[in-house]
Length: 419
Ligand code: AMP
Ligand code: MG
Image (cartoon, rainbow, N blue to C red; front, side, top):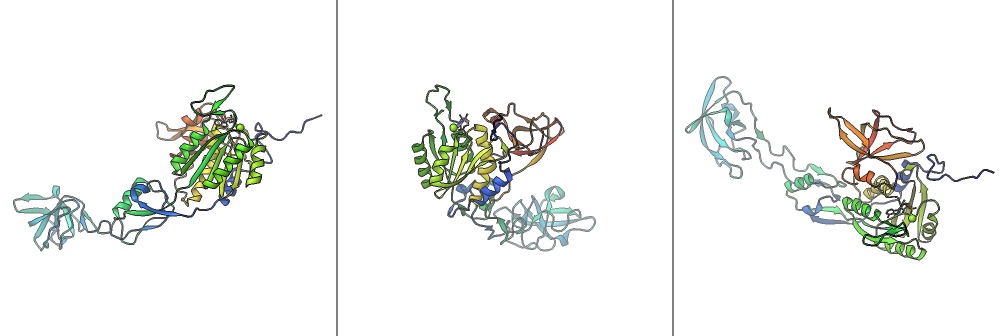
């Protein structure tokens, strides 16, 4: 007699699996933009999500000014051939303008950033003039308007500068400051609770006995959430115990926008959590056709969005990056800018069987000609966290791929500061 088996984690092709794209689509459809914005000082707004469009109320630069140290002249005085002499009426400094007017035959000594005096439209740089006492001699090599920055040439009053949904970076903060804006509206922080499940897990400081392991998932999750800028509620390790789990789910649902758990959703283990979630929430358990990280639960517990991630440390990071992160971004209304998929030459041999999308861990480098080259980081097991620690990108192998020979081009996703 032949034993009929359900597909297990060993199999790469599983007809009951959901595709990665379908899973992501369902997750995104299942989360909504949170309500709530706060007005905060721009320094505090670094890495926050802008909740309003920012328009300039001023011209930048506010006045027409000199781009160089030199002499402000009227272009009508520039000779078409030969040279011409001009009197110097005074000096215009940055922050201390020249009060008079540049009349024919005259000019004004001007410093970088100084407002152009009335009557002048051109700056001749000091290296191009001969200064003699109270006058200068110029030639015809400077064109009308040279070395002058026009008012509003960088930003004109009314221009749209930054759009709602942007994650503010240091340049943005400086740009907002350059407009004289002190406070901006940002989306409130998401509150994200998480806990690890498993009787084998120990917290740092506890002794390891009988095959126990230290809980690392709470630390990688903490790091990734911290980088995303969420508020974090770390609920510790919860034993595989019906009552303890049920209590933890209820507390999280009452206090957080999002709950993330790790462990306890794979074949043979899920039943506990399934039983509780059937009571407390609306959750689907999926097998997603990815490696690592096939088992994944998604849904709602009370009002909180719920992600049940697999237990293996690399699977946690892959599923966070690929599924949780885009959902959190949608919840805070963040635009998609910055998520890059690049092509790189792969200098490693990568083993793979068709049936699942694989996220192998890679190190992206440059060869001596400046081309992007990726190599894999050693053993790729889903429990091998060193493979993530050494990596700076995922190498994404499509569902049909049968592996990669050295020299082939692959898709890579740089971690871009999140993982
Ligand atoms: P599970 O999904 O609960 O069957 O866990 C799969 C594997 O991941 C097991 O080897 C667990 O011991 C391990 N694991 C689960 N949770 C954690 C955690 N928080 N930190 C490190 N390893 C974990
Ligand atoms: Mg477990």
